[in-house]
Image (cartoon, rainbow, N blue to C red; front, side, top):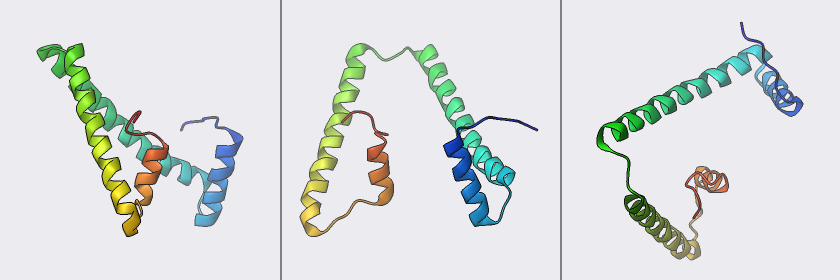
Length: 109
């Protein structure tokens, strides 16, 4: 058993979802938490593996980091350019892309 405190706004959202699903608040919270925790475990293991690699082979130099960031920025520029060209053709980005952009998942662009 685990007792936690959450904001009232989150609690209200959980209550609404539970009502919509005809489920208990506990089942909604447990399902959501289980999914999130599984992703957090994957993330933590991945970060640990990356750190182990760097400890064995060395961390990137400032120059290597700058080069990688420049390459990523160029890829973002090309993606933005392609999207701009497709806009007049009626292309609409998928919802996940819009959400990821809004959350700035790819860092500063």
